[in-house]
Image 1: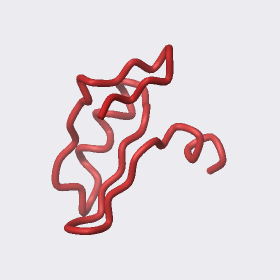
Image 2: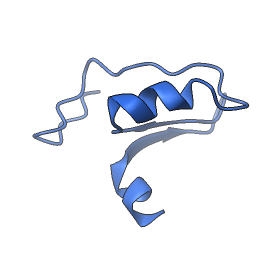
Image 3: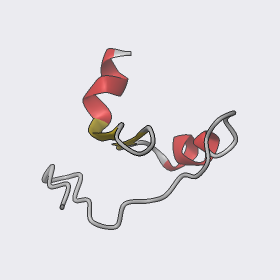
Image 4: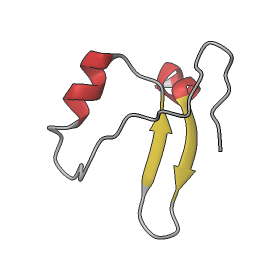
Length: 55
């Protein structure tokens, strides 16, 4: 749980509940099949190495 928290960098709870996090390609694909998950999208603005998460 603590490791998962370290990989999250953005949250939204105003219009819908969503979050952004850094995960492996395998985890990315596994999220798509979870109940209640509407969509999973890659973030093209992220630079994980430099911890720059864009706007």
